[in-house]
Amino acid sequence: MNLPELAAFLKSRRDRVRPADAGLPVGPRRRVPGLRREEVAQLAGLSADYYTELERGRGAQPSAQTLAALARALRLGGDQRDHLFHLADRPLPESARGTGARHVQPALLGLLDRLATTPAQVITDLHETLVQNELAAALLGRAPEPRGPVTGFAYRWFTDPDSRAVYPAEDHPHHSRVFVADLQAVAARRSRDSEVAGMTAALRQRSAEFAALWDTHDVGLRRTDHKRIVHPALGVIELDCHSLFSEDGRQRLLWFTAPPGTEGAAQLELLGVIGTQDMAAAAEDSSRTADRNR
Image (cartoon, rainbow, N blue to C red; front, side, top):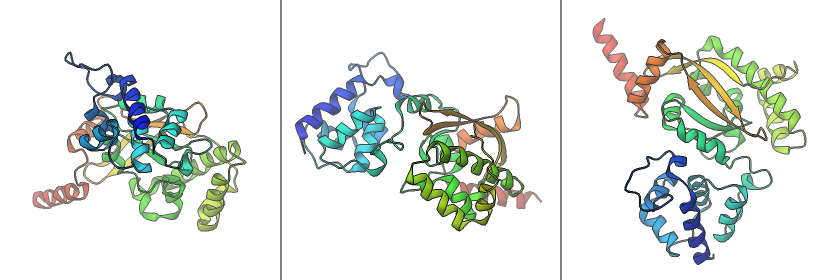
């Protein structure tokens, strides 16, 4: 591992990220043009002491997960991310080889940082969540780990019945059709991609519903949709879901809105207050309150 070069590279990238690009306030007392060390550490989910040691050319070899987090925090492009891995003497993860579909594209990440008052997340074209803001985690739950196509919502929708609890049961047929039509379009565009072929083959084998819908050959990328989302504390929330596609179509920024003055808008405001506290506990408290009022 080339610690001096790694340290110099990290510092050079940190100096080039404007606080506003990372969704941070720009105060009058900033003495550095880019991010502070503690801000990079916060964005990457690291301790400030650990990141400082890296920039000083000391400390333990960072893991692949740490490098990926730093690449996101520093808004690195594909070549820069790969360079970071090389300097740390870490092999590129499978998801970073070739297309790099799971490395969040800086443009989408920059927009996500600005959507502080609405649930938003970046997903792949196979519906694998890459990064989400706190409101999205509060609305939909945190994305499962480790990442990969089988943890994507489309795959889990047809293989894990519990994943469907986020939508009312009467809406399930609609979402099934939308998922399959969307995956048909993705599979055609990525016809030589073994990842897509393997995923669709597995779904055909595991889900009779998926197989039947796949054989209809309905096609349609999901760009907008009206959704009813079941929240454990707030009940059913009616929202509009919007999608912004990356240039290559491999990633999407999703965000959820409700028209002003609607119940959905009021619920979103309340969601910001509730945040990501234990939603099961919140739902239980709500149920107890309702029982006492009967």
